[in-house]
Image (cartoon, rainbow, N blue to C red; front, side, top):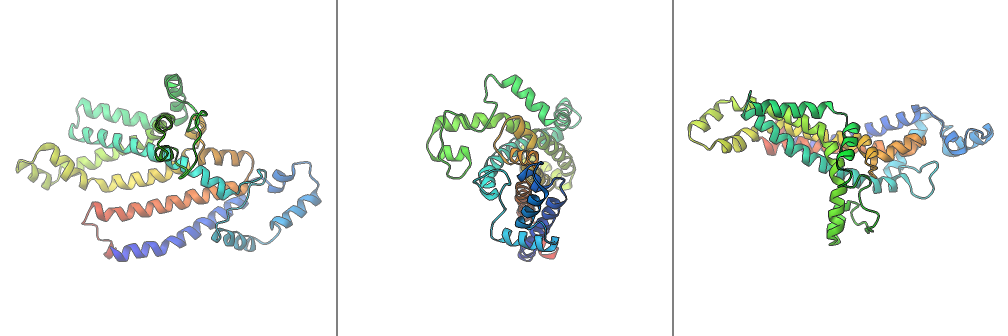
Amino acid sequence: MTAYVLRRLLLLPVVLWAVSLVVFVLMRVVPGDPTVSILGEKAKEADRKALRERMGLDKPLPVQYAIYLGKLLQGDLGRPYKAAGDTVAQEIRRRLPPTIELTLAAMAIAVLGGLALGIFSAVYKNTWVDYLSMSVALAGVSVPIFWLGLLLILAFGRFLPIGGNLGVEFFLEPRTGFVILDAALAGEGEMFRDALLHLLMPAVALATIPLAMTARITRASMLEVLGSDYIRTARAKGAAPWRVITRHALRNALIPIVTLVGLEFGYLLGGAVLTETVFDWPGMGTYILHSVQNTEHESIGGAVLVLSSTFVVVNLAVDLLYAFIDPRVRYGHA
């Protein structure tokens, strides 16, 4: 186990370097001239040429990448071309916590709901419970998130907030960047309740696909485990039915479920663009969308780099969880 952890940690900088290289290449092949975004389409070619030289865009690509990598090592993700004031790193530092907050809420709904549907579907196989659970899972995979978001707004918009992550009547001094946590730390009960209400609809909309996938994976994994000899032995010894399911079957069925949850968490971090757009959530999704619309290459590259790095770290954490879930996994011999 120790050898595996050390090997993965040593590989982490290599993976992050590869991510930075891919992001740099994508920034250079994305259509659009940064000088046009800054100076406008009517700018003179001489002015554009001077700006390219000042920005280092006239240098060979290896030199540009060396400069870019040097800035990354210093924590510098660049500056937006048009927006004055905050750097890309400062903007991401402000935008990332709301996205993580939304993703965590969505994954909590998805995991709890998906496990419940999958377990009941496996235990009551080929009954109306099974058919109903899998129908819900199929609907969750099939319904587009933006359409579901609009339906939620139409159905519950009179009772729940439909935009932002906090009411305009509240002022919150940011400590951690997580609105719910900051409201709790400040002891503002009404603000905490308002933040939860703002979070509810976008979290439900974002949770539909991972909930459906978790339910299907849980069902398949549980059915495989429930047919094992040790489960029949536990039942023959008189163990309570739900103790057999939760203590013996579920723990041994968790490996594929944890893998899926880890992957889905990473996907949701970078794939919440539609949900954040529909509900005007001030997170990374809307930040990337606005950056694309304004051809802000530095902002797009910084956001993609941060989200990709987060995805890599989450996958590493999921791998390390395997040994705690299933002692049979011997990473030291992998």
